Image 1 (cartoon, rainbow over the protein chains, first blue to last red):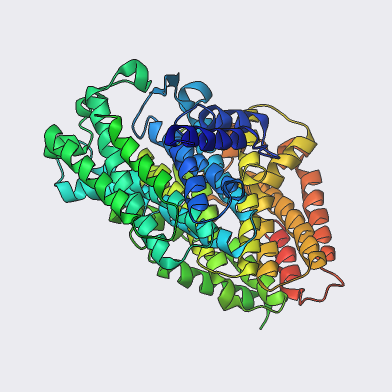
Image 2: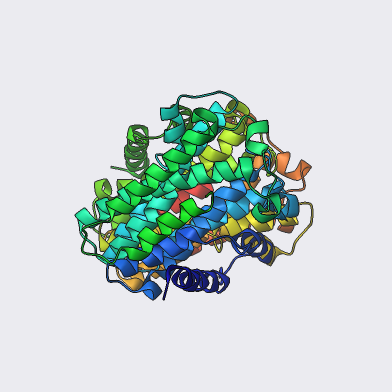
Length: 288
Length: 288
């Protein structure tokens, strides 16, 4: 199986597991609002990373599915809350009206809260020592020193032109944290050792930084229909982006450099790293 | 030590542990917004229940502190989000301006998200099988079949006069879930058996229902300065309350009935139930 086929297979596993989530006991309206955003497509990159990392370290992709669902739920929650009028005020996401446009602001807040809570409920249902360790990694990544740190800096500094190291910090939090945790959690689920997990962390951080730059470049230069969102919006709104901070040519070089770092981080380990390395290289192809 | 002294001691332990939370890596603004609501006083009932339940079943209150902090963080997050303009639109809580009034709506949403995430981070840091079990109970209580189910029904049915069984369902979710989980989690942390945990669940549910009725009665009849919030607001805004559904005299009788159930649930167990039983009776004294 080549990279593209393998990615498609992992992605389908994640998609089906997400569709099958029953959300037992949730009121119909809440379930509907959560599923609207959770099942609105996307690359399922974070879920795929969990499965791939777990298999790379000798675990089973099947067993890692609850964690793949969890990270996709955390990602979906973060998008719902980010899109709110008091945050980024976005009305369109992946070509569809955002959650609060469809369900109202109150329900959108609850849908985000519900997805975050349910992620932990699903992870906690896997009662094993490895699962507990992996859950801790997810909590930290989603938390106040991870994703929420990036988001806070992003909204408090909007409209300013922060130095490159601050932009890096924002992207490490906003994007890289939730691309790193699926890798380290996947490895932890398979019982990987500290050295391997540290390498996974380095891989994830660099992948995350590259991913954010690529996203920012696509916002500047991409195809609106393909992206399913309003383009050029970042610049109009004074959003803090890597290309805005260092210029487009340097941003391209930086993205390539981060991908090299990510690929090298997984060299020489006792795991099957090929898929994860191919995935990193593929990220770059989106803007080349 | 009598009940009042013991409560004060547990409460102080919780208060000090909350004050000492470092929120490592959180941006200053986010930490400030979280601490504003988390450290704004209150009875610390949920935290106290964790410590008391853990000690009742032979565990140590000290060891249960992370879970006491976690449930208080979950409670604080739920209040911040409930107070938002698109939810209950409250400007005053415990005599102070609500979070979004002070920090803005975007930061208030993030502060709530941060407290919820951090609760799981703090619980996950306690790496033991009992802790993992207790974390699962907290996740379920905070989740879409618990607190968020109650909150969803509450906002979607606002302005209607639902039947008593629906009001009960709302209160089981909104209030009782997050009074039950600290009890069952505290018991689980001490390694209690299934029978004891089932009894703790019955205790918590009944305590929760009584607690919500008492709260609603105080909103109708209480002292604004003592309560630190606008009174009579529930009725003005068509809020769904137990007294509104069955009338004040019946609501008083129901509260007393639930407290009897709560007290009896803990009879005949192999735990030291006196404090928890005294706490249930004390809840009722607030409106007698």
